[in-house]
Amino acid sequence: MENLKIAMQDVASKIEVTLDELMPLTNLPEARVIEAMRYSALGGGKRLRPFLVLNSARLFDVDDKYSLRIASALEMIHCYSLIHDDLPAMDDDDMRRGRPTNHKAFDEATAILAGDSLLTYAFEVLADEKTSPDAKVRCELVKELAIASGGFRGMVSGQMLDLTAGDKPDIDLTTISRLQDMKTGCLIRYACEAGAIIGKASDDEKEALVSYSKDIGLAFQITDDILDVEGDANLVGKALRKDEEAGKVTFVSLLGLDEAKARAKELVERANQTLDIFGKRAELLKQVANYILIRKS
Ligand code: GRG
Image 1: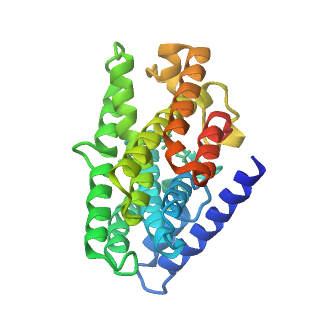
Image 2: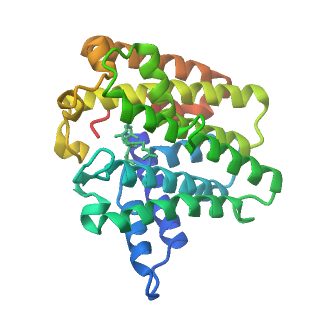
Image 3: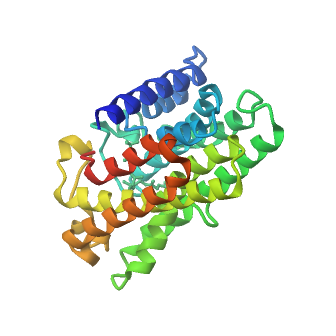
């Protein structure tokens, strides 16, 4: 695990530098929105999605200078979703990553704009030639990210279902899995898929990465539900036990803690098996899947 820790810190610092360069501060009168974007995008976090992008792309010897731009675009979408999710109209949270949420640090209108701007800027970054000299690759990266984050079969659809789930206490495991697959899973899937796209992976290689990412995405959400019940709010960096208070159906409420943990473990084991086609080169991806099971934040 020491290896993994160093590798994750390395990606986190590289992504911090890239995001900082991509979003320079300005003296212009509208600078407040840039400050709010930087507040959330440079505000720490595990950088799991960037780690997955870089290490999937490295399987195909892609230069990090390309993957870092893709990872930054994906992190921008992730941060936009967190800003909007924390708003009073959605989850109404005061703390995120151990500090005030964007709308608490700025104001609601600025937080909405910062989220909007991160969402659109992500596509500008992807569409730029610096992301890939191959226009077909850029197009595919843009298209798949739009699908993963959108409202037809992506993150926004998952969020919509989540917002209305409270009114439907009879939700079953299939429904909750579909909801979470869209809300959390789609961006995690994109991280690995993007590595395959930029790496011009074969169909089998791409399929293996997508299958791995689907399984770890679900395991990630199950552990999120577990952390909500037995996690430490100081380590997680936000208020916990909100699901139970809101009467929300989660993997833990449906399966119980032990069964939820067993399910997450099974998913990670299956995910790691699918990476066997890459041999030793997939070691870090396997380690990060194992880390999902024991994460404390
Ligand atoms: C508002 C369109 C819109 C979508 C919001 C992702 C999401 C949908 C809401 C976040 C709510 C939440 C806590 C989901 C559980 C899984 C998740 C995405 C956790 C946060 O991701 P981490 O743990 O965060 O990777 P860090 O801070 O490490 O980047």
